[in-house]
Length: 254
Ligand SMILES: Nc1ncnc2c1ncn2[C@@H]1O[C@H](COP(=O)(O)OP(=O)(O)OP(=O)(O)O)[C@@H](O)[C@H]1O
Image 1 (cartoon, rainbow, N blue to C red):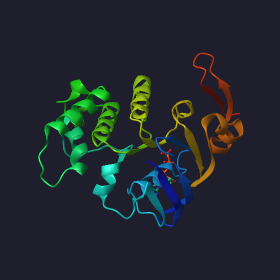
Image 2 (image 1 turned 30 degrees about the horizontal axis):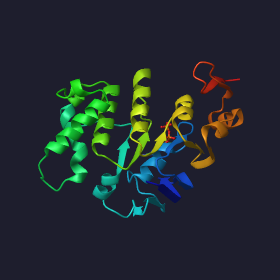
Image 3 (image 1 turned 60 degrees about the horizontal axis):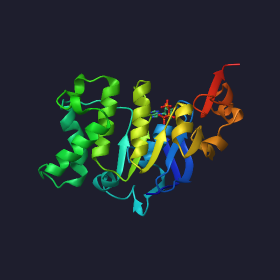
């Protein structure tokens, strides 16, 4: 599916946080959003997935007008993994992941064998099979984050939005989660802080500063020392890692 964002404006209080952002992703593209703390990445993503009401702008998944249709219609197509996964009540890991099936069901419709199989598959993909009966609230931050990804996989979305999906994860799970998402073969829009991971996993990247997109391109074309200094205020040497042959970034403050 293609995601189209047109002239998105978001204000919080009196402050303009997202300023007339427009872009269009292509089918099955893994698209990254990079930018300094507070530049508006999460706010923009929330505006796209109806977590916050934009002051202006339109958002489409193919032809579906996301801001005009019900939450349920959105959830049938769009999965979201965000940074805050606190719950006020406890569920088992299995029950949490089963919640991912809700958008596809009628009110009070019971779970089918197919739902159970989809949940088992999502647990396997996120290495959580042995956690099935654990209480969600008892999990570590990284384990919770994997459960939320499993729930989103069980939702079987056609498009996924990820807000810092590797936030709480150790190195192995950072790689596993991004591999897992990439292997889903669906369109993805992800805010990422780690530029090496962004360069490796993203087909295309948008760089944000102060609520605007200031640069875009394929990782190999986009990343320059000037851009990184402009965004993050650090000096940076970009090199080809001799072991991985991927882009590497060495930072310093002066
Ligand atoms: N509910 C809110 N009330 C007041 N200010 C807010 C609120 N939500 C976000 N902001 C402000 O909007 C700006 C953008 O925040 P946002 O969370 O979108 O940034 P971000 O780029 O995702 O940052 P980070 O990399 O730190 O997650 C920040 O200055 C933040 O303080």
